[in-house]
Length: 178
Image (tube, rainbow, N blue to C red; front, side):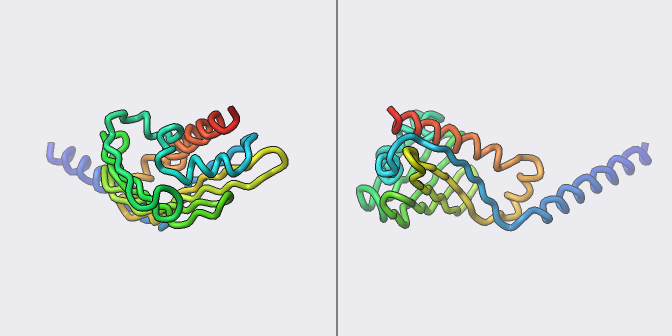
């Protein structure tokens, strides 16, 4: 019986060591990016992203918790606008602040998550005219701390976050092409 317990303990220790080594080998930063072409002028798209009050109409996270507590502060829109939220386990809590808004081509947002995990990232939206359409790119990037790296051994952040970006971009496309 002691041999079986010893073998199980050794196998478990090796498995834990492998997971820790795989986590340590992950990059120190992450980036998730999605893009789509919209048959709308960049100004129309820019206005929906640059004003946090408009995010309820297209953000993929708004529907995940209709009871989410929201607050707005700072500027009404553009640089200095702040949006904070506190919701269920699907949306957690956090805060966004627009750091730069270059009409109508780029918006840079400081994105701070508090729950369920703390994270401090940057989100960027870029709108580039291309003929009668606008190419819209949504990127989030930031540091990958060890806990994040450990999660990435089991979860694909690009797939997990990317599907929400795709849903948000599809909502923006639907609104701006109407």
